[in-house]
Length: 218
Image 1: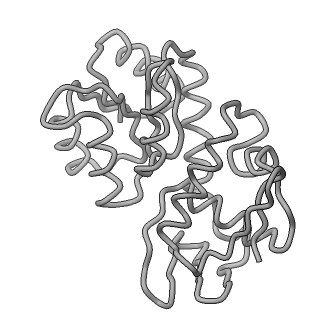
Image 2: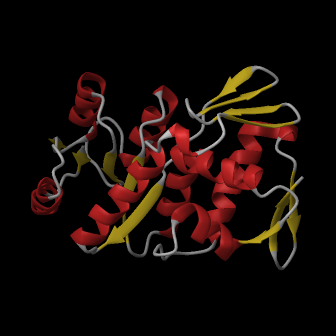
Image 3: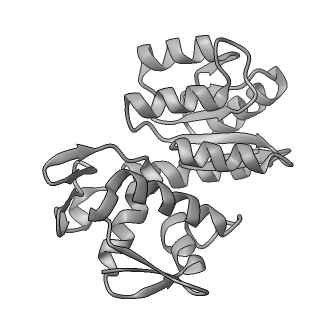
Protein backbone atom coordinates (compact mmCIF):
# COMPACT_ATOMS: atom_id res chain seq x y z
CA UNK A 1 0.00 0.00 0.00
CA UNK A 2 1.28 3.46 -0.95
CA UNK A 3 0.10 6.44 1.11
CA UNK A 4 1.42 9.51 -0.69
CA UNK A 5 -0.26 12.85 -1.43
CA UNK A 6 1.81 13.65 -4.54
CA UNK A 7 0.05 11.84 -7.42
CA UNK A 8 3.17 11.75 -9.62
CA UNK A 9 5.17 9.93 -6.92
CA UNK A 10 2.31 7.58 -6.07
CA UNK A 11 1.78 6.71 -9.73
CA UNK A 12 5.50 6.11 -10.28
CA UNK A 13 5.67 3.70 -7.35
CA UNK A 14 2.50 2.02 -8.55
CA UNK A 15 4.03 1.35 -11.97
CA UNK A 16 7.30 -0.06 -10.63
CA UNK A 17 5.69 -2.21 -7.94
CA UNK A 18 3.11 -3.67 -10.33
CA UNK A 19 5.91 -4.58 -12.73
CA UNK A 20 7.27 -6.79 -9.96
CA UNK A 21 3.93 -8.51 -9.48
CA UNK A 22 2.61 -6.59 -6.47
CA UNK A 23 -1.00 -5.55 -6.12
CA UNK A 24 -0.90 -1.87 -5.13
CA UNK A 25 -3.42 0.21 -3.19
CA UNK A 26 -3.02 4.00 -3.17
CA UNK A 27 -4.28 6.60 -0.71
CA UNK A 28 -3.65 10.34 -0.89
CA UNK A 29 -4.16 11.25 2.77
CA UNK A 30 -3.92 9.71 6.21
CA UNK A 31 -7.68 9.29 6.66
CA UNK A 32 -8.10 7.23 3.48
CA UNK A 33 -4.89 5.37 4.29
CA UNK A 34 -6.13 4.31 7.73
CA UNK A 35 -9.44 3.24 6.22
CA UNK A 36 -7.79 1.05 3.56
CA UNK A 37 -5.33 -0.48 6.02
CA UNK A 38 -8.18 -1.56 8.31
CA UNK A 39 -10.15 -3.00 5.39
CA UNK A 40 -7.42 -4.57 3.23
CA UNK A 41 -4.67 -5.60 5.73
CA UNK A 42 -1.74 -4.88 3.34
CA UNK A 43 1.49 -6.86 3.55
CA UNK A 44 3.52 -3.63 3.66
CA UNK A 45 2.86 0.13 3.81
CA UNK A 46 4.91 2.79 2.03
CA UNK A 47 4.15 5.92 4.01
CA UNK A 48 5.01 9.55 3.28
CA UNK A 49 5.77 11.71 6.30
CA UNK A 50 4.08 14.88 5.05
CA UNK A 51 0.48 13.75 4.61
CA UNK A 52 -2.73 15.78 4.75
CA UNK A 53 -5.61 14.53 6.87
CA UNK A 54 -6.42 14.14 10.53
CA UNK A 55 -2.79 13.23 11.23
CA UNK A 56 0.50 13.29 9.34
CA UNK A 57 2.59 10.30 8.29
CA UNK A 58 4.32 10.02 11.66
CA UNK A 59 0.98 9.94 13.46
CA UNK A 60 -0.30 7.27 11.09
CA UNK A 61 2.92 5.29 11.58
CA UNK A 62 2.28 5.29 15.33
CA UNK A 63 -1.30 4.18 14.74
CA UNK A 64 -0.28 1.31 12.44
CA UNK A 65 2.33 0.11 14.90
CA UNK A 66 -0.03 0.33 17.87
CA UNK A 67 -2.46 -1.93 16.04
CA UNK A 68 -0.07 -4.55 14.64
CA UNK A 69 3.23 -5.46 13.03
CA UNK A 70 2.60 -4.51 9.39
CA UNK A 71 6.00 -3.52 7.91
CA UNK A 72 6.36 0.22 7.21
CA UNK A 73 8.71 1.94 4.75
CA UNK A 74 8.80 5.71 5.34
CA UNK A 75 9.35 8.35 2.65
CA UNK A 76 11.05 11.46 4.05
CA UNK A 77 12.53 14.71 2.77
CA UNK A 78 16.29 14.59 2.19
CA UNK A 79 17.08 17.27 4.78
CA UNK A 80 14.65 16.03 7.45
CA UNK A 81 16.79 13.89 9.75
CA UNK A 82 14.37 14.37 12.63
CA UNK A 83 11.55 12.77 10.61
CA UNK A 84 13.71 9.75 9.85
CA UNK A 85 14.73 9.29 13.48
CA UNK A 86 11.21 9.80 14.84
CA UNK A 87 9.79 7.45 12.20
CA UNK A 88 12.20 4.70 13.24
CA UNK A 89 11.45 5.31 16.90
CA UNK A 90 7.72 4.97 16.18
CA UNK A 91 8.32 1.57 14.60
CA UNK A 92 9.05 2.13 10.91
CA UNK A 93 11.17 -0.68 9.47
CA UNK A 94 13.13 1.43 6.98
CA UNK A 95 13.12 4.79 5.23
CA UNK A 96 13.93 6.25 1.83
CA UNK A 97 14.70 9.93 1.28
CA UNK A 98 13.25 12.04 -1.53
CA UNK A 99 14.15 12.28 -4.33
CA UNK A 100 14.62 8.53 -4.65
CA UNK A 101 15.08 5.84 -7.25
CA UNK A 102 11.87 3.79 -7.63
CA UNK A 103 14.06 0.74 -8.18
CA UNK A 104 15.61 1.32 -4.76
CA UNK A 105 12.16 1.48 -3.19
CA UNK A 106 11.18 -1.81 -4.85
CA UNK A 107 14.42 -3.40 -3.61
CA UNK A 108 13.76 -2.17 -0.07
CA UNK A 109 10.17 -3.50 -0.21
CA UNK A 110 11.38 -6.94 -1.30
CA UNK A 111 14.07 -7.03 1.40
CA UNK A 112 11.62 -6.07 4.16
CA UNK A 113 9.07 -8.65 3.01
CA UNK A 114 11.72 -11.37 2.79
CA UNK A 115 12.59 -10.81 6.43
CA UNK A 116 8.99 -10.41 7.58
CA UNK A 117 7.79 -13.52 5.79
CA UNK A 118 10.87 -15.75 6.14
CA UNK A 119 10.16 -19.47 6.34
CA UNK A 120 10.34 -20.68 9.95
CA UNK A 121 11.86 -24.01 8.86
CA UNK A 122 15.17 -22.25 8.15
CA UNK A 123 15.89 -21.64 11.86
CA UNK A 124 15.24 -23.04 15.35
CA UNK A 125 11.66 -22.52 16.45
CA UNK A 126 12.48 -20.49 19.59
CA UNK A 127 15.25 -18.51 21.23
CA UNK A 128 15.54 -17.83 24.96
CA UNK A 129 17.65 -15.48 27.05
CA UNK A 130 16.66 -15.06 30.67
CA UNK A 131 13.14 -13.64 30.77
CA UNK A 132 13.17 -13.21 26.97
CA UNK A 133 11.31 -15.74 24.85
CA UNK A 134 11.33 -15.36 21.05
CA UNK A 135 9.07 -17.51 18.87
CA UNK A 136 10.71 -17.40 15.43
CA UNK A 137 7.90 -19.16 13.60
CA UNK A 138 5.22 -16.77 14.85
CA UNK A 139 7.61 -13.80 15.09
CA UNK A 140 6.42 -13.16 18.62
CA UNK A 141 8.35 -11.90 21.66
CA UNK A 142 7.50 -12.20 25.34
CA UNK A 143 9.17 -10.96 28.50
CA UNK A 144 8.28 -13.08 31.54
CA UNK A 145 5.34 -14.46 29.51
CA UNK A 146 4.02 -10.96 28.76
CA UNK A 147 3.82 -10.30 24.97
CA UNK A 148 5.80 -7.38 23.52
CA UNK A 149 5.06 -5.96 20.07
CA UNK A 150 8.15 -5.26 17.94
CA UNK A 151 8.43 -3.76 14.48
CA UNK A 152 9.82 -6.07 11.79
CA UNK A 153 13.32 -4.60 11.90
CA UNK A 154 13.37 -4.52 15.70
CA UNK A 155 12.49 -8.22 15.75
CA UNK A 156 15.20 -9.06 13.21
CA UNK A 157 17.79 -7.07 15.17
CA UNK A 158 16.85 -8.83 18.42
CA UNK A 159 17.16 -12.25 16.77
CA UNK A 160 20.57 -11.27 15.36
CA UNK A 161 21.80 -10.30 18.82
CA UNK A 162 20.46 -13.53 20.33
CA UNK A 163 22.05 -15.58 17.53
CA UNK A 164 25.45 -13.96 18.17
CA UNK A 165 25.41 -13.97 21.95
CA UNK A 166 28.69 -12.97 23.59
CA UNK A 167 30.18 -11.42 20.45
CA UNK A 168 31.00 -7.73 20.10
CA UNK A 169 29.22 -6.53 16.95
CA UNK A 170 30.03 -3.27 15.20
CA UNK A 171 27.26 -1.11 13.79
CA UNK A 172 28.39 -2.00 10.27
CA UNK A 173 28.20 -5.72 11.07
CA UNK A 174 24.67 -5.18 12.37
CA UNK A 175 23.69 -3.22 9.26
CA UNK A 176 25.09 -5.96 7.01
CA UNK A 177 23.49 -8.76 9.01
CA UNK A 178 20.05 -7.25 9.57
CA UNK A 179 19.55 -4.60 6.90
CA UNK A 180 21.60 -6.44 4.26
CA UNK A 181 25.03 -5.83 2.74
CA UNK A 182 23.53 -3.76 -0.08
CA UNK A 183 21.82 -1.34 2.31
CA UNK A 184 23.33 2.09 2.65
CA UNK A 185 22.43 4.67 5.25
CA UNK A 186 23.46 6.26 8.51
CA UNK A 187 24.92 3.87 11.13
CA UNK A 188 22.86 5.77 13.71
CA UNK A 189 19.89 3.81 12.38
CA UNK A 190 21.22 0.92 14.48
CA UNK A 191 21.31 3.10 17.60
CA UNK A 192 17.69 4.15 17.11
CA UNK A 193 16.54 0.54 16.90
CA UNK A 194 18.67 -0.46 19.90
CA UNK A 195 17.08 2.37 21.88
CA UNK A 196 13.63 1.07 20.94
CA UNK A 197 14.50 -2.49 21.98
CA UNK A 198 15.81 -1.25 25.33
CA UNK A 199 12.63 0.77 25.89
CA UNK A 200 10.29 -2.09 24.99
CA UNK A 201 12.17 -4.99 26.59
CA UNK A 202 13.61 -3.27 29.64
CA UNK A 203 16.09 -5.15 31.82
CA UNK A 204 15.38 -8.40 29.96
CA UNK A 205 17.38 -7.02 27.02
CA UNK A 206 20.89 -7.48 28.44
CA UNK A 207 22.75 -5.50 25.80
CA UNK A 208 26.09 -3.92 26.62
CA UNK A 209 27.38 -0.89 24.73
CA UNK A 210 31.06 -1.33 23.85
CA UNK A 211 32.12 2.28 23.40
CA UNK A 212 33.84 3.03 20.15
CA UNK A 213 33.01 -0.40 18.77
CA UNK A 214 29.37 -1.44 18.94
CA UNK A 215 27.25 -3.76 21.10
CA UNK A 216 27.42 -7.12 22.84
CA UNK A 217 24.47 -9.21 24.01
CA UNK A 218 25.03 -11.42 27.03
